[in-house]
Image (cartoon, rainbow, N blue to C red; front, side):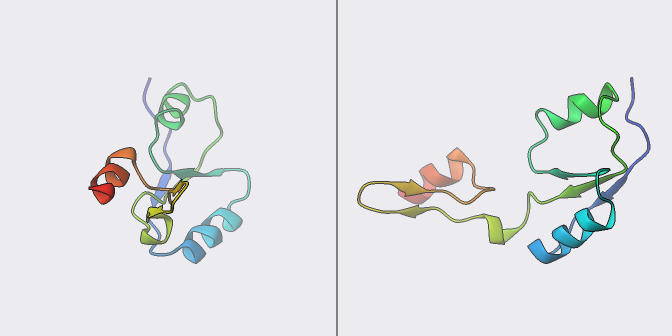
Length: 86
């Protein structure tokens, strides 16, 4: 199967991403990695009209290392955190 037609939007900020989701309630979905979302779209299990790609938003990145824990941003990868630790 192929993906159903949809719009792809790559916002420049979290505020723009929130606006895109509010503009299409129930049919817009966030895309960050896509490991579970893309297969569901291919199988047409979700009614999606718009993908809002938040993977490049710097606001969601940044690892901080404290004495007893590591705090990762929502879009940080394990690799990025490991490199920052070095």
